[in-house]
View: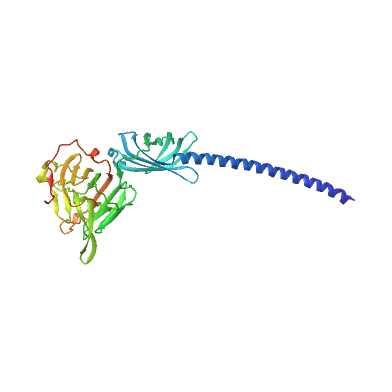
Length: 384
């Protein structure tokens, strides 16, 4: 009897406990489902905000000192967790020395429902915190304010961007040699601090780092610094032909070259026809006032306008060459590391040429010709 009396009681208690357990499980399930739904809603909202603003923005900016930031490209890419990976390219003032020129920021941003941005970016080892920043998805514009404090000094940046792509295109991404190919000899090219570095080697022919793409009419701007022991130049509208040297076949680069000449002769930005006709526009006979335009051991700014049969060059804002020629209508661009004879110049081994801020314009060229300098002697080498 006791067993029968106890057993129903035990069963009642057991099932009461089971019902309590089931109730608790049900509540926990409902809470978890509610939280998951909330997270999904938040994720969906976050996804919507991030999806609305990802893309590329073009613009300019300001920094703490000495001033303007140019040619800004801001790329926002949505990640799996709906944060935004930000990659920023910008040309900083050359007065900043080591970090002047074309530089790259990277970081992660979060976009809120009111389209403000939070997060951080890094330039080299400097971390910048984003503040007072916003993005307008309707007009595809962005404003980024960010700062960093280093040894008690505050460094402030402001960048703005919009949908309009600038007329100029950068040909070097500042990180690697994507879009470029080596031709000719065996000199080495590396990338450091947003610069292409070509290093001379003895016992090899001239070596060229060339664009994979070819260009016809264009306006080209770039900066070069070269060791005084090394001659160099920038190929334009150039090509290759097969040749053999010491029993080794290779592609010989030929075509127009905008000279880089650190010697006392001073023919930098003159026009040479590499591996074909030699000098087309030597500087001294035609424009002797330009022989002092090149600055040794400094960055030198080149500008080349190749439009139709006319090629004009400027060096540090000084007009140097004005040539009429019809040998090539298009071709690749290429930075030369000249061959060196170590018997005559043993000190030229490992001499360097550095290139940065190379950018090209291929549309609306007539409207962007440089017209604020005095005309110089024009040389016509077209054969009748």
